[in-house]
Image 1 (cartoon, rainbow, N blue to C red):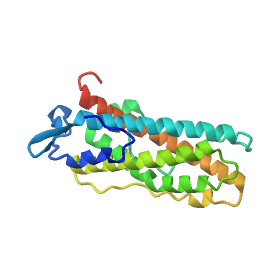
Image 2 (image 1 turned 45 degrees about the vertical axis):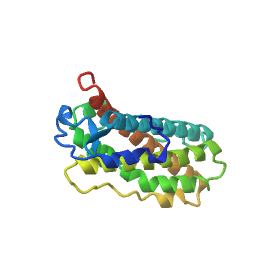
Image 3 (image 1 turned 180 degrees about the vertical axis):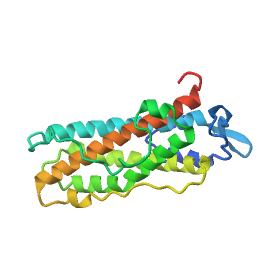
Image 4 (image 1 turned 135 degrees about the vertical axis):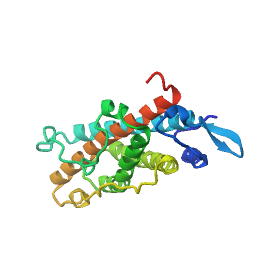
Length: 225
């Protein structure tokens, strides 16, 4: 079954999943979603969509950060300004690929779900406020829109999947409180705020990409990951 990663309805297939148990052992997870007693779509296909889409998003964010930084390189201190603490910094999630590989599959999926949820509201404001920034490149605005749309689709799929195989824990993620910084009257301050925000998004998008592609690999070739 061929699915387009940009097709809005791609993730509705996840709603057909049922009775996914014993996630601790990936070998025990059913290898397809059942509908009326028939194998409708494989988990391998669904995790392929998740992994591929998360990788697309990560690359888009990286490209947006590079374009933004290059365009505003003349802003005082931008190139050498360290990223301040991100609103997701306090989350107890795997920090890198090595930690992620040692993490329980359900926890890994929950971590991806939490990060995606934590960025849902900020991404809406990022797209809106970027358009009001003086001299912002059209490519940056276009990337922000694409990222928001793809991120929303990925969140929907991951959230539905986690709700079906998770243990019923309430979703808990930190609030984003930097809107005032993006709307500052000081244009240089706004640019630095956007730079920090996109840098944080870049960091977290890479983590989501790692989590989902580890899950994808363990579903498709569990003995070779």
